[in-house]
Image 1: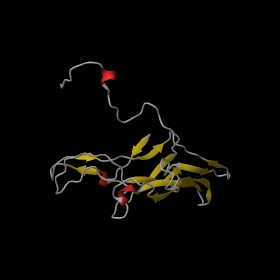
Image 2 (image 1 turned 180 degrees about the vertical axis):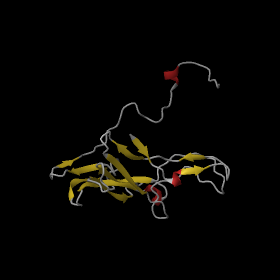
Image 3 (image 1 turned 60 degrees about the vertical axis):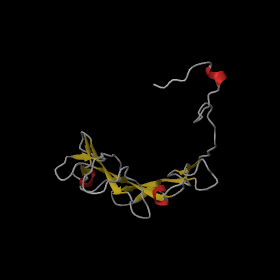
Image 4 (image 1 turned 90 degrees about the vertical axis):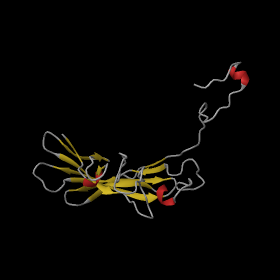
Length: 193
């Protein structure tokens, strides 16, 4: 069976004090097998302050009346825990590590251009021993115009390394604009419907 999150701050009231609520986001919280084993998903809060805005609400309304029912996520997956029946402590955890980076050079508010990058995960057994996990690296060079932020390396638990190389490829027929010439369209009368 599946269960989903019940974070109270994801239930947003619209239309004033007597209005109804809507759910901004739901997160998978638990999977239970028929044998009783459970997998639990633990979430952390994304940053949203003056320095870093990992999410930007699509609509910001002044006052108490809220009309929009925007869906966006304010949490990230921190770890996954495996529980056996009758155990109060997890028998295995997968802990994720992240970096917050601003690799984008796009125009805009710098605090809104920050992205959370998965830099690795590790397995933790029931006695708290950290087992080998994986590590990830991303393109950070500013001269890598089209691949900044792309995955460039994965290091496996046994030490094996996979390097990724990215190159620019133009896709034919994907132009964002086209000027129609008279010889392409033939004779005709312009119309507006």
